Image 1 (tube, helix red, strand yellow):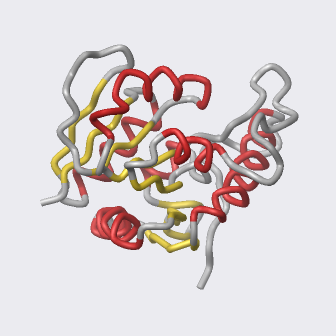
Image 2 (spheres, rainbow, N blue to C red; image 1 turned 135 degrees about the vertical axis):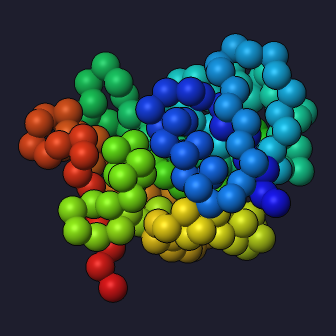
Length: 190
């Protein structure tokens, strides 16, 4: 059985926990600042990007050898008008550089919590895009997503996290400007 620890108990953490449980995984929810030991083989960072360094400082040693799922969109939250990582990089790449003994994958950042919880974007199944350099890590996460009834797609290497973050950024700016609802999203139609 797959075991997943989710650091962050907000809307996204709760929605991902629901998916993981529905997909047959054993789930551990860990609040920020908690001193709980991480039990999952997969650890989801369900946090805003500015909180990641604190979590890495606290749990870095425990993350070695684990799949670490970065769901962040590294926005400038003061303006919602820019990303705070270099244009040729991504939050996932920054995290991977700080966790060289972990298998970092990017996922869930192009989804809103509502579409993860409902399993649908309009009349289409919610699609979770997963990028990373370790195929076994991507496959393990995709298996849980698909077992929960969502569409999971391998988006390629961790280099694709840059494009996933750009898509997430666009979706967030549209929602913040009230041009789309927080229950909306991009759908992948096959």
